[in-house]
Image (cartoon, rainbow, N blue to C red):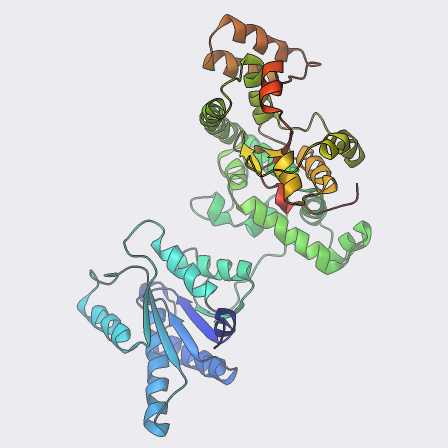
Length: 449
């Protein structure tokens, strides 16, 4: 029996805009679809997936069914199959009667009907589109490049690395012929930043946000974006200057653009630094209140010193502690050798939306090496966290626990040379052994320390 991956290699899905958005007539669209479906069949594709939307989806499904039925009449059987992937049951209930009839006929004659979601919600169409791509190895897309569901499907297919056949390429401006930051913003996607999808000069705060997000990237992505977009160097020249191949440069450039396209990076560019930073800091503070309550329930002997340490680590991370991989390793080795491997506590515990504690005992039990942890610590220290300050730490603690004891414990933080530590009661009761890491520490590449 074929595996799911083997089946996927012989599946092809469709995406396209609705009739009113198409610039070509129906006959031309259908002729192109027939040509691409015939080519896919010649390449070994046997199963086609239609998203069942009006226009391209339904027309493509109808063509597949007609080819299948012609083969059955001619030979008595056909290897072709059609999967009708609907966003949810009743998807077409409000359509005009003609399109409803075509939709119902498509479902009736399909070899399989899949309702990707059972009820309508805001993400049903994207869920349907991603399901089709995830179950295919080729996407046939007919559209004019405008923002919308089809473009989202094409971009998702690009991320997944499946083959894409489309009616015409969308011309992309040459970044080397445009000034920074417009060249970079166009590759990120103008429609994600501007309501009208047209480039406008960034405000000072938006430019601050863009520069901030670039600084938050890892060094290879940061170097490539700087040299390609700001310095206008070719990929080949960048590769030569960095001592890497052109494909390596392209990979890290694409990765950097994808990171800037994702939240929260895109918010810094779209909304500006100040607004986004304030919003994220308020969210982080609220999350930390919830996480702190969980910690206090788990560790009832936490006192003011332990609370201050928790908030300090959650807001400021560990950038102030690590200078290089060797230093990270030196601080860790003795403690790690002295702990016993145990699964009595969770491997990680969130202390804020950005930072977590990696407990050393379960890490050792799972075979994680001290070298890996030291590398993760060093890479985490290179992350630029939200711009919390020691004053923010002090204010948070005093507001959360307005007592004289907390005032004394929190005010110590205002001394730049002071680093908080656990109380003796906490250490005696819980024997804490952990390291603070960035939330996505598993994505860091291993390196020699």
